[in-house]
Length: 248
Image (cartoon, rainbow, N blue to C red):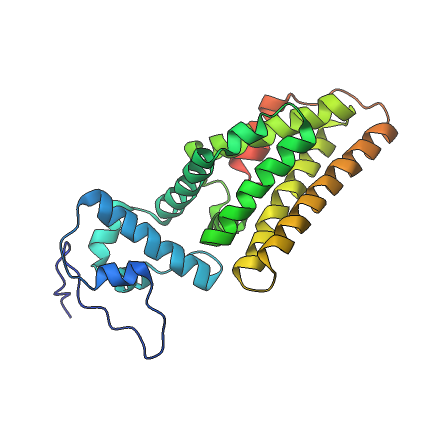
């Protein structure tokens, strides 16, 4: 059967009875033509809703087209491959975090202050928009597919904290990497619980802060106990391999 939907026009949205209608869906119901950047942003917003609802990758291209009231051809015009769509979502999320001050927070002189400030920014972002970045980065579908631009922000922040742990506590590099990996999951998990209505926001923020400080305390104690080990790869090399190509 031929798809009669115009690639640049929406069809009226018909949500199921009792289903909530988001701001995105309300926009789609207006049936007006959208500028390319607005169209792309709308596709990203609808895709984020679908990722959050499904909880894993990949989402169906036809599902995205149906939800956005466009043709599959239009989806492919903006996002030729699924990794292009998911990288765009991650890049958008990191851009918003950077604008909110994530990298500036990570550069604070005091390690604990930097870690808790960065964690709270990420936590608040997850509370507001859901764990989209978390779902995408942790899904095996994206293994080796993270774009250089998305990996760059993640790598800069991760290397900053790994360097801080190594400098302050003389911790072996692989343990610095493990601490950073664990620390990055805490705002994601606390924020996800709040987003899903399972935890009060302020309690979630407090838990996130205490858990991050707990990781730093473990690093402090482990550094005091660490034995001498052979030299390991430099932080820049590890950043490219562990914080870029492979998500932590």
